[in-house]
View 1 (cartoon, one colour):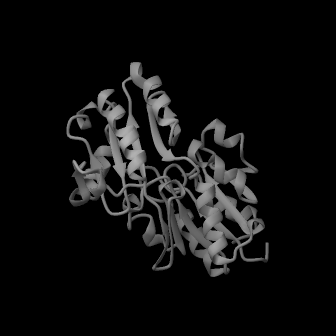
View 2 (cartoon, rainbow, N blue to C red):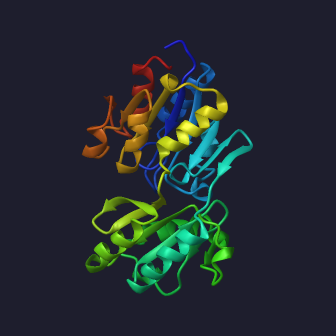
Length: 265
């Protein structure tokens, strides 16, 4: 591959696992592919504020796509940063409260939590991660919806209330289900693939020169959209079913082996 390619990397399960380091071979691979003239982007479901400087951005990337395609930057320039509308928030928040759903509103600058439901977390690793990474940016949901600046919502729903939440969310949102009752709520029309498309349009990159690397359900759209979709060996089966190529595991030099296989390094 001699033409310049743009490679889009998911974070969790692709570049690293929470609490662990990025494999040294992955760092070397990203450095090498950029030295060879290719572009490297983070492309994450995380909101921008939850994309950490260390151990992720310090590797060196040309840009960041975050919040499932609602935010993107290139170099030091923000290309777009879309937020949920007041109408969308007014529609879903009462249902989340009434069903005792633990929800977190994720924005570019702040992450908001509900005081009444934060203790209903079924799995609080993400809450603890936020508290450790950006404690000063973790704040109570404002009473005035106009003061909320959020891109997406992460939810943990009581099992007997999932259908109710799902039905309400369908009006304005799409649900990315990670487990039976743990999901992300993203406004209709936004995906990682859409973020890649918009970035490429801004930067003059053709779709044929795109490569996506991921491991799970919220990577499927970008794996299908990119000219080449690469899935980590540790990835979920549904992600692998949508791959053009399956590399070795994250901690088995998966990134390095994939970049080498396609001649980028």
